[in-house]
Image 1 (cartoon, rainbow, N blue to C red):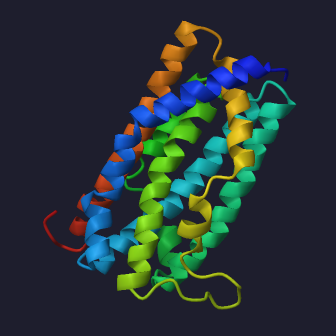
Image 2: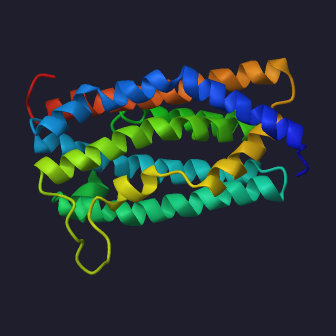
Length: 242
């Protein structure tokens, strides 16, 4: 896939502008009740368990989405990017099991649980992207969604370590049990560069820019809604009013 330096530079400016416009959603997650109650140590452990349980379902659905994205690849570069993301998602699942075990959810119970419709909003939207959108639009959604998830993940990890006895070495590994929230909340430059090239390839005119802006807006809005649902659904799981 040949993309000129000028088009990549334009894509970088476009993405940076969108990130600035949508940064309020990062703040909304970081300062929302789920993260803040966890930082205070007043969030019921049942709510954290719901988060861990539902994250499992999100990762599983995201892996399915990524397999569809691979099939949409129009060239080697697009296929490679989505394969790279698929491998990263599989590693994330392996890491997530450390948190599952540490927080006390039996594997059988986890595998027998069901996705919560309220916390599945974002991943279900990304399934729609797989069906109706271009690889560059999907890559943009991933790029913009990531900081929203990562902002919440980092602060939640800190709260788990401070208030819930987590962040300990995971037996049989050289990792700690919150690894999934720590290691996978840092975007690599390689990931950013690969995604940016896909965005640039499909950012061809004003109509494409408008469509991408809509994709980005919905990707971050749905992620913020999911974090809000972690609180309301988690409190219900604990038998308390949100």
